[in-house]
Length: 281
Ligand code: PAF
Image (cartoon, rainbow, N blue to C red; front, side):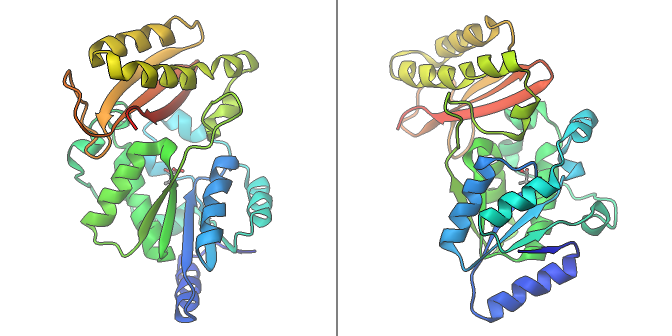
């Protein structure tokens, strides 16, 4: 497995593979890899001739400087996991390589980046769009893989690909869960032992919401979820929203005859966890 730090070298590597007729799959990450990331790599390895994984902790998508500082960096372990997963190349650029100039670009995604994560993490999705566009320009992948845990991010990236007419297929992969249902996330390692035991309540609450949705008014369901989460002494609900899976618009009181998704963000101490579940399929 090769490791490349330089953007021009990375670009040339992909272009050369494509000249040979090979299909390049790409898994962008911020490192601190877990089984969820490796599942994305597994999908890419299966579906493409070569797989590139990037590791870049993107400073411009952190609206909270503390979060950026505390973001785990586990490069050696990440490389070992990627080698075991048969990844072909790791793109590991320094910040200067990605941002030689200060970033000023402002994307407009309409409502997609105003609700839920966008509301509570202003500027986050603009930072994600900036880095994903740059990574796509450098890696020029044929396919790129993203996890459904970050459902809103996926919607933003699809919108970005459309807006910029990017010639890349965006592939989404299902959430990977721990045996007790907790969605795998880099942030899980920051939970204390006792918080970790309680954390499965998030998944169980989504299952509860799915069960209740057909015969409960959305507002009533939202109240019940809020109570369930906030009654747990280790949790504080940031939001629970039921939204159209395509537009991400909150559904209000009338249940639409379309797929809807429940999205949740919960604080456990300083650790912020998100999860989601389609309610009506
Ligand atoms: O999902 C992530 O890990 C990041 O937001 C991404 C897509 C790698 C961009 O930095």
